Image 1: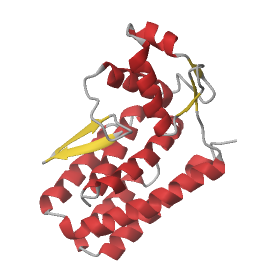
Image 2: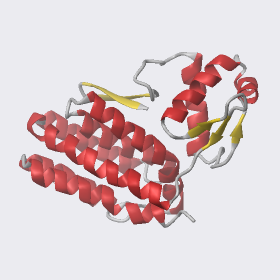
Image 3: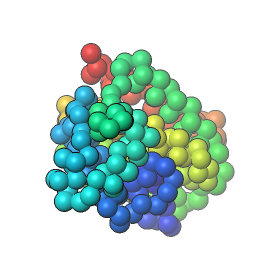
Length: 229
């Protein structure tokens, strides 16, 4: 999944491989499967068969297989040759590793982005934060807006390869973020955390901005790892 920006507009395009699949049958299959994984319809260990998914969507098997490959590239599926795919999962150590990597990479992206920020960017970040607030009673939508906030900010570094790695990490934890939000009413101190990130960006101090985002990301580790067996 990649995030594209155009002025003040933020658009998600499902793409784990850097190619543009929007509007294709493969993209429809990808979104359908991703939604099922994130919403818990396809929990960890679920065996997915291309023929069955194709029948559900009334399309051929080829786009389903393409969607399987894209989800596997995002570590959400494990491919089984001639036997479809299995929904993947993370254990506690793997979850911790993903968040540690996110912390470093998002910190780098924001350090680079600070010198490029304009008031327009900061205003848009504030609007994205408002969108998170507006959906705090809708866990699925909240997680999407939360991801948009982070990936929009990282995209301002203008480092597409860096953003792609961050996006892949986000995809691998997306189902757990949805599960976590379903279990809590409102993440404690969440708005304040993101507001402090914006305030740090306003100072123009890249070290402070990097410290704030890393503190925020790493603070999520125990919240999600505690859900895992």
